Image (cartoon, rainbow, N blue to C red; front, top):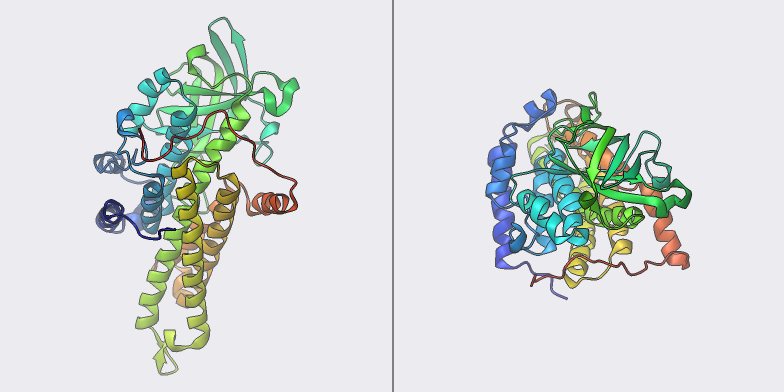
Length: 396
């Protein structure tokens, strides 16, 4: 067991932290209020190699290990959840899925420009009537010669209006239920595709989230990802990567809550002493600290399993569940520590609390992960080997 970070990882953390402090922190309150961030951020993230940090160099990435992706997500969410979400979706859900399941031609056409940050990738699974119950999706793709005709709708899709490529899931044979779902690579420019942002979100307001619409979209057969009927297991393996990044981001949010709360505790005085000297306030800080370290250990354990090429669905589920719950609680306590000021936009903790709720819901609600962990313990759930795995690190 090695709990040390390499010099490269330490430099990466320092680089991302400096980027967050210089490029995000001064503007995030304004972006959050206005519902969007400066689009040139993408180019600056790409210039630092952060859009493909754990993608092999031969596919346009930085070639770093999977825990380096966790570091990036942790530090970005310290700035705001919207930026971690962007990297989670682009890298975790899309690019890593292409790396795992894509053909060489698909990697050349889609993965390389995404890893370089020249194109943006997104992920379309959730529908108005299908969230945790993936088999309830209605989108359908019918094969006609060398193309599939895709019809349907997706909702709560991050980067809906800015992504160039989408990994989309649809039935090709509804009679087979889970085994009848197939994955496709859809381009924004394909006729019949459209998107629409969702306004009035409770949190992650600076991020772009919305709906995708497919009206007789013709998808070439070569844009099918995997074989017909493999879509469900491709989606679940993609969620392993996405949940890993969500958990890492939650660690960063806990850290942000700690930093803001400690600063306020040293500034604010009540009953003749700094509020941090009151035991019940100190207890809240102590719980944040415990949640931070426990979550971090769970996250980096998953990263090491990924580096070794070991399936990690069970460990990822636990990390996502616990880290997101700890982050939500940390944000709630941070608001409490700030008192009435915490309930306003004068301090960042109100934004932290709003942002902390979504990760408890998406990519598997806390209830879904609770059931999963119970099933593992009871021996009712076992992870079968996948036909394709993410490449081990170091990459060949």
